[in-house]
Image 1 (tube, one colour):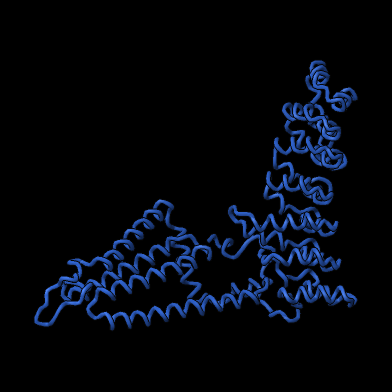
Image 2 (cartoon, helix red, strand yellow; image 1 turned 90 degrees about the vertical axis):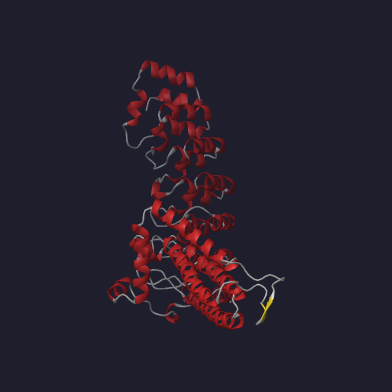
Length: 447
């Protein structure tokens, strides 16, 4: 590169820059064709010449992503030289620059974590939230880097950040970041345990999404790593913390089937039912799905309204006595034979509309369980309303109350079993991608 251009960049002289361009219109093009070179933007970034750097980006945006012969981008150099204002200037130009891998796959975000520049790290997270999942050539995330360099405050910020993410697939991203394994299969928890860094272990175990029992390529869990070390007072304290949080040794964990074995087994009724439902959802266009959801909601509202205000109304407090005595206040006026028919067909329409709404909802537990709870409560309310307006209130209410209690107990037992199972659940040796949270079986099937 022309020494005069280097001097102009170091001095931040925009006039000198344009004088050189006037002399040679291709001076910047000549630099751009070289794959690895120290550009004027690199020089300005290292010197903290903000105005010159912004002018250079305006002329040659590609310079912002070019690496020099040391594998550093202009943003890497600005961070290395402590040029905070220029760093933020580059960040405003393109937030994705914080994810640009340099030497050994180190991104600018990795660099600020390693250097312990917590304010810059926070700015990077706000500008580019997904930078937290980037890894270097060793498969190390920013969490690994923070633990290795004993940056505990930065580690707290990183864990707190992924726990507060709210965008689409935020929960998947949280699981992926906290349980990402490096080339040796070690997660951040494994690294912290290898190095007996009790503070880092406490920070990580404070998150429910950190898998206590994930194993590395040697087949060791965090507890196994600790038990293989020389016992001392510090190790016993760490062991107590890991065990209390649910950590176990690999030998005590149940063997899990590989995905290949699972796929070879015949499909059972439950899988068949959910597969058919998912296919029905996916084959329905968004417009049709929205229309069907509106229709289902109208049917639910209409049938529920009939339970509250049946045709012909109900007897009021001023009802006249007949030969059979005074009519019960609040019961239907219509004859019982008509009530029986109305009660059956209205209930069928009510339940059918709920099933239709269920089939049209997006797949996933995020929608399934809240919907089931709400519809169960709505169902109980509907049955109570129908019981009140029926002359055979005691019989009808007793029958349906018993049914409702059975349904509630079943759901409670189901939730309890799911909770117990989730405490024992470990990542199955199905697939490396599934194990690290990069995908799920549902996503692979297109659900």
